[in-house]
Length: 277
View 1 (tube, rainbow, N blue to C red):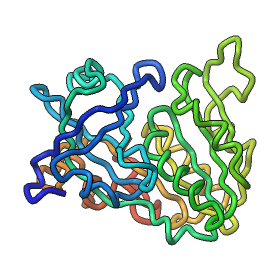
View 2 (cartoon, rainbow, N blue to C red; view 1 turned 90 degrees about the vertical axis):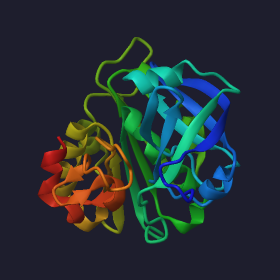
View 3 (cartoon, one colour; view 1 turned 45 degrees about the horizontal axis):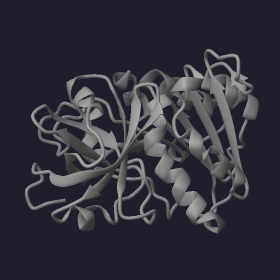
View 4 (cartoon, rainbow, N blue to C red; view 1 turned 180 degrees about the vertical axis):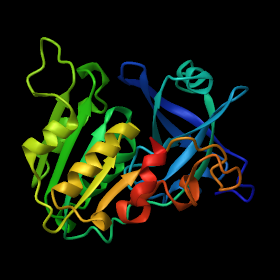
């Protein structure tokens, strides 16, 4: 992070492409010291992207360290800032403030089986976990990915599914709420898929990100399946405003998502998750 934590680094967009309906991937080349600041960012951390003249918004970092000199973000067009970002193209400049927050303890996960559950744009901060495990495959046990969206057109990183499937000891399971005529995978909520796949909690950790209501029901089901609270990880990114724990906008009881998170275990937050809904 820069000496002034409110001052963004400059970033040049080296790639802008569609990921899904109203979701774009922005690959950023960081300038004026930003590359050094982000070279050791961890899976699970986040940063703020600025659309100059419009403001900034927080996004989970969507690329793992060691996968090149650039940093990826997935941006869903939802409001003023994200709409402004969607109007940019390769070569345009953005501001990038971070990296911020805590991260998934990938060292502590070594030797364990990982169950990764992503819903819609919530798959973006989970992509670095998947990439990191694939890049260090012998360090981890089985990798089970459950990937969901309302419609096939809203699934993210579809061009990487073959890479995930080809990785040793890795399984990818897909589901959507409403299929199209080409869909040949599961249909239904991710909780339905989770019951069908029924991953074992033995020597396993779960990692979940998606809409708040999805996180609520998935973590509850995982608990019923035997996943211990300390092995049930979530990443939360709602309502963050300053990213520094000063404004209090992202409070979760006595915790602040931007500095105490965004990564938590259910042992960390327990019933506080209800206030996130």
